[in-house]
Length: 450
Image (cartoon, rainbow, N blue to C red; front, top):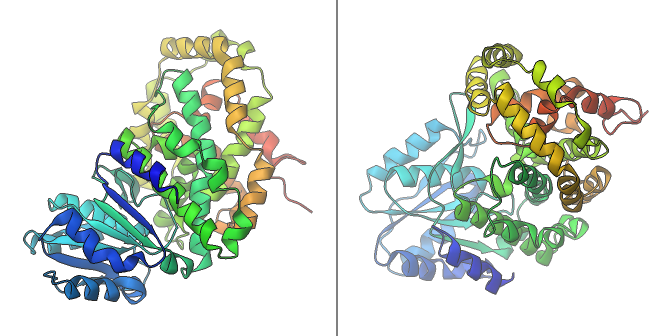
């Protein structure tokens, strides 16, 4: 790990003060806790799986150092724990019953998000002991929690400290590294979306956060075959990239540095699966396929000259706010998802005059925008090769999404977040149907191979 670079980034971070990655660093958990929290008591939070991996050892090391340690809070290992409001409330209640006690969560995405929000609500900071390089949420601002059937990023601070022992990371199931790889590779399309949003004056690029994610992204994701083989250096590089993405989100107080259209696809599919009672798929696997969906769409956009769009014709047929509400509500078959999609869609609605101004700006800036996006992107075929080498899925049916559902997702994914992405660009320029049709036509990216 590039310790100097990580430590320099942490100086800009709002919450996290220490990140320790390396062989045998679990032995330093008591020292890390003392440096961050002084004499305060601790409570280990885990599930039955992560308790066996490292939770028990963390408990004994804290106790062996003379630290007051409460009885551990251990969630069941089966069924799979989910980051939802119910589990957050359960942990929050237990923490409130332990006056001044600092949680030490042992786990990865789900456990970290549950603890992050529960600790915040209980007025505590916390420490996380990572058990897999599976997602970028360790150091992220906010927690991805499902409430009322809708996945939301709840505002809450990141952990005070992160500790990750390579011995533990290397023995995590290989698919967990693959899901982390999918999450990290998605920063390619997330970056392209931010370029669009910045140019069109929707959301400016944060010059502090952008380089933390984008400057080393090609290096972090450049050895997927070694990652799949369990190479420790490749795992360390992956974990570093995920940590830096989280720090970038802290600095921006937003998920924008790490989340774009690829996450819109992922979140849509997750909420649809929840609403229909289907099996859940790891976050990074959905992001992997979402990244391909977004990258393939970008390829169809970039071959077009958007400086020649007919602005007046587009504005003439632009739907009213009421028409958008009716359309969005009718397009989702899960009531809770429909309500939230309406709220998010209306939050970013432009009337015809506002749209005209954006499209005129797009016309003027398109040559520059296209050049910047082309420099940011990798070909969709190349991204597919990288994901396959890492052991991540690349076909929608691998994550329980049909071809028909994928096609519909190009329209629906835009509606679930107010954030501007390429999905909004193709909708506002009137080229959505044409681009998607090309992707599914014979020879298109999503055409079935005979």
